[in-house]
Image (cartoon, rainbow, N blue to C red; front, side, top):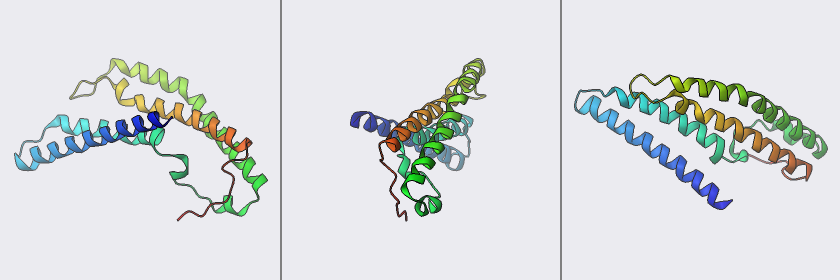
Length: 158
């Protein structure tokens, strides 16, 4: 499990580094050479989408996501159990229902290419399907943990 997390972090870091490199090339070409490169705009947007969705899907742990826990911290443990199960059933269930249609759309977009790089849109939108799958897996895991009584304590988040 540690190797998978480490690999996911390396992939995310590599994507971000690539985005930063494209951004620097873009700035250098536009302001240094006074010759904007169209491919850098497109690559930066695609890499940004990948970085955000990849990080949300596989890098950022659940406890690090933004939450509004005022209600959570004010209710007793049995109520938190119900909130955790119902909340994760909603999130995981909606993501599960969205996977087939999203996958169909992503596959459909394989026939279209990005305007400058010609990259099939399937590869641009693929991380969204990955995010949906990750939401289903995370939600199932969180429900299992809640049933076992883990993760139900009140927390102080600063």
